[in-house]
Length: 406
Image 1: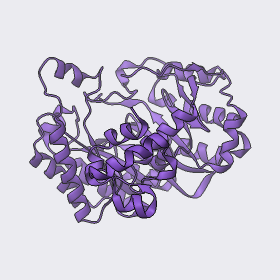
Image 2: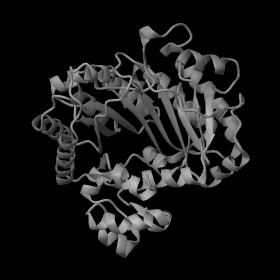
Image 3: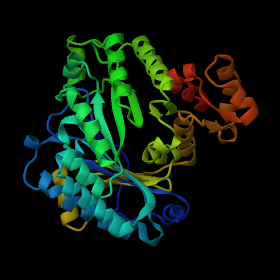
Image 4: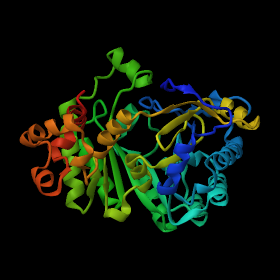
């Protein structure tokens, strides 16, 4: 599990600089809610999550909604009258749907009461296929949720076993059917590059996902993070590291199959069935909008100030019970840091990055990136935008390094 970043101490009140708050007048606001509970921790996961047997008093699923509402009170006090209405809400984890649907709706009601929701607000919850029921999805939809993101990962049993995923692949079918019956937009999350996964295994997962006709698909290359159980298995020689060439082949296959049935890529790892099916909440992160992260270890950002909460659910609940902000630390981004992040995130988008947002060092790299087939020549010359080609998407991190001179 990763450490919290180094940073400056956060004030107990959570107070933000006036210059940061002033940006709320022109920025969309998102709310992220981190539910840190899982039935089982997957071997590849390094998120801030806990199984219920690891937690003591004051940190149970039954207490979470009350703590989240208490942090919303802090958010209202800190952000003031210029905040809201909220444009997007994303409930992630962990496994948010380990909470009763009524608790998730209660948290959403708390956001609505304190900030208001935009008329077309996007409200998403993540879900494991085996943690939702048709009745629960109906309750979420009735309470104002508009979208569910289902952690499918794979349909191949031996791949799921390597990832320590416990759901039966058939549960994905019923979860999607339940979401559709409730009127919820659906997204499927996939992982490729798992040790032992063949190209045919990956094709089977993609074809199953396509057959379910979701609105959105995310496909992420497996990364073996230090501190995870999978990293230990790799170090012992029980599993091989993911192979870069294999992952490139699988990415190309994903793009081909998804494009053939009407999905458009809009971010390197995300495809949507039309612009209205994009995940607007994630787009807010990529644009550098304002968001407040609720929950243990959650990160927030307003006007170039970024902060993060204490990690353990018990410490989180204790801070809020005492009337204090749960923030553990924060940093104020420099102009150079904000530029680098704008480049890092902007070039991953289908619209690309305006060339006038790249500094002189980046401009020097553009001609070479075009010549190497990593950047679309026509978009650069005609539209003044840096847009990745398919090959550029495969090497997006290398493109960014050259643009920022790393």
